[in-house]
Image 1 (cartoon, rainbow, N blue to C red):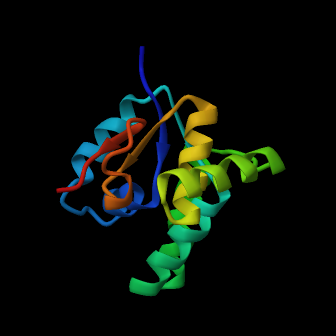
Image 2 (cartoon, rainbow, N blue to C red; image 1 turned 30 degrees about the horizontal axis):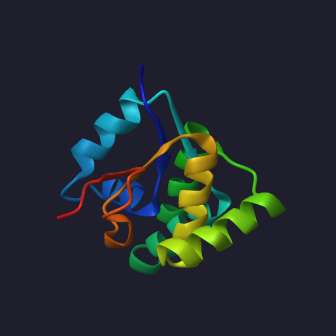
Length: 127
């Protein structure tokens, strides 16, 4: 059975900019059962790409995400779960939302962000 993937901005940016792990990210994205993201990821992806490149490239990244992923709705229950995750795992709040939604969706977080390195629900790609 294929995996359900919660794509983190780290993985999507690496993939879109053909970073050192882009081929591995591509394999996971192609072989996954489903790719899910949060609206917060869309915001983070947009600003990180516009910051380094330009608005057109950032909007193209958002278009890619809208067409190829399922953007999960955030609820009050998810916000509370993210708050608990933030406290327990000591993650930045956006990352806590990512992990809380991944847990709710029974998905693996695909990332190389060092904040996630020791969390069991993560496929860690970083060094």
